[in-house]
Image (tube, rainbow, N blue to C red; front, side, top):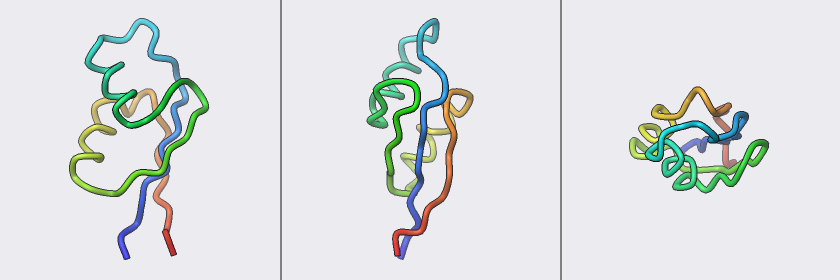
Length: 63
């Protein structure tokens, strides 16, 4: 089974560029201290890498 990523937004997008805000919203995050669990795929990893300074990322086992 593939692991998943637990992504928590730790900083606000206020003052960030529009593409960064769009990436955060595309991940399903709606504000600081919101958490989503996403698949560990190259597309999600790339999105996380773009805004890693705003996030906390943990790998979780879906077993």
